[in-house]
Image 1 (cartoon, rainbow, N blue to C red):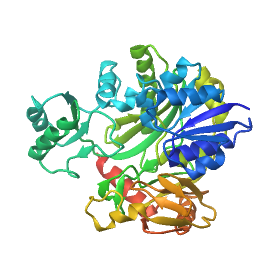
Image 2: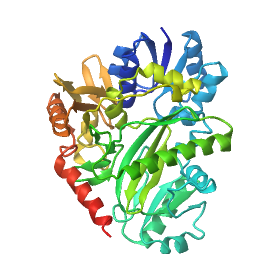
Image 3: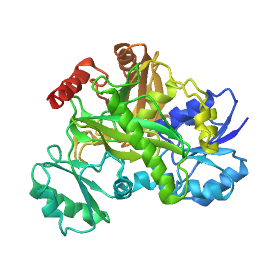
Image 4: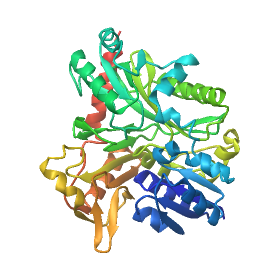
Length: 442
């Protein structure tokens, strides 16, 4: 009966908690959350509400409860050095130390690492600490992407054609980014289709999990502002219909080489999740970015399909023996739809922003799984925050059946809410297939 510490309070962590609770090893789950997640609380023997910056309190809680190992959910505790602090008291973790977490927390670190170790997948790019030289570099690219160098909650990337139209606008945006960030990364824009490849890594061995496609845009048809993710889907063959097998293998090979480069560069093995955001292009897979943890919502697509004991997976990651474990996932489709306040992702003066403090009611979601995200559980019920509220996941033998289950589950939540109806629809996927056919035409 291992004592396991889970750090995090979102829907991703609810899915992790569920995977831990399913273990045949009868683990005892203790959870450190910055806000009470009712789903995680219901699966935990003990919970503590506290800050992710209070490392002394977190390590004190771990020591007091004789924690065997920790699983770190979100990026903020990783950036704060929680893995390092736990290591100092002899508690290992599934999650990289602060230096290795730069894979996510510093976009310039990752681009430069890939470049230095001659790993394929990088765009043409440059990191600018000031505006010196930015204009000339912008003008040398057909279309560009701008990124602040740091954590942005999945919403900081600015893409030409979506967020701005001209190079003059790009220059002005670079100046704006540099007011809040130490540097700005300017990259060439790729044309293609994105896919999420979440890999388990023990420092030496990299194991891929089923591919997922996330939907960042707030509204149906991939319209509106970028969000933390409105939902995602995966398919029974664990691939995507618009990809070639070589795209997936290239993504895996890039991740293997990045894991090796990280160990060589830092002297420490990367133990945790390496979540690569890739884009399939005319010339193969290219790297958009890495996250140093499971995706949210993507964790909700793959963890319910995991047939291998998750606690056993964690132990092998920590021990550096992933090559000795056969990790299996069910051959099923999944569709995740996020329920959000109506005002989510919209300007502060929008009429729907009051919905972020409203009460919601959650009824019977039927066959769909429910994962709580940013909700506030009070004595008189469940309240929305300004962020994503509930992830609803349908799992079935086919994508259409999974989508129907998710859609029925969404209807069980009442209140001033919104969601994307088109996630998991064949029409939306066909658009992606047609797009890739077009750009890959000889």
